[in-house]
Figure (cartoon, rainbow, N blue to C red):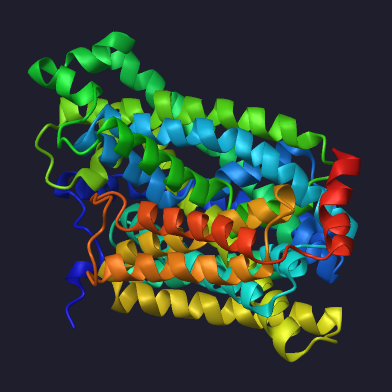
Length: 513
């Protein structure tokens, strides 16, 4: 099997420049790894070794740490490198669509987050399966959450490993092969997760989030200085300016409806019903902190996307209009305008995002598989100490599987990630029913997601046409609409939950909101 397709070829000029300044690049990388080690040691000293501390940090994270760990989890290495390239190709329409999603997701994050937190405290819930399986009293519903978690977390973990392996290959001047880079990231992540739990993940995410913000701010400063101001970033587009900054974009694929649908579904899937973000809700110290988390999330996401990735992708189009591989436009631009050390920090920033996303997704994958599958279906009386050991085992197996998939099937990751996002979104009607609509029935919670999944798979494999055909949303809109309609209709013709369960969920929420 040829290994060439595994990575996108790094532009020769970029590779030569890094190789000629290798000691400086390696020093920046080593400095980051030292900080990572210090954070792991500090968090490890606070780690009690108990299951609750491993899963949710005993519900004792402050709002600043919680916000930054949510953001660092969302800011994957693929997004930080891929969003500027998407702007380069798709124009401002792409960021417009993403910002629509951010504006929709922020209030929903607050709305659902408060309810998830309250029910978690009341019933000792830690995972999506705990809440949804508990409300609908269905192992099938729990299985849906496990399937969504497996697909979502595996797909995005593999994507991070691919990106991280490429970044380490570039940072080492080609000395470290991509495959060995992926293995190195996995080993670092495994040690970090198993010795610190979610507290260590959150503390590292906080540092990584601050690093990302600082480096992006420096990047934008140097870009605007070179362009002669903010407007100069766009004036260099010349005749392409109007097409680049307005809908439907250079490729003509972002109609207003497509922009709204893509942004909303994409951001909701990664920020609201994402298993990693969901579990973060249970780690918050108090329910009242969620308003601060939501407002900060909205402000920072706006700054990062509008004044970060949008500027980088747009100015990349101005300076390198014919770059061979747009995925490297941000890296090439960094080494063009930033001091070499700061440009190296930009690559390390991408690596930091890779680690933050990979550790969060592997942690949540293990928690959901062990708690919602193994414990519920096979070992209902499992001791917490045994559950913790099984978490470690599942993490090791999942990480190993991620490396194998990244090496053998790198081209399959993008369609798998789209499918994973579609599967995760099927949980949204179920969550709404459990926390906001007492009429929701167990039959609806079982049948409606199954119908949505069938539509998603059918469209993806061309078994029937997509009525909302789009290269950006293959089957996602249709599957979610079918799910929502089926969920409502079936709930109205079947019995709702027993009164005692409605009281245990909706009654508790009514008393505490």
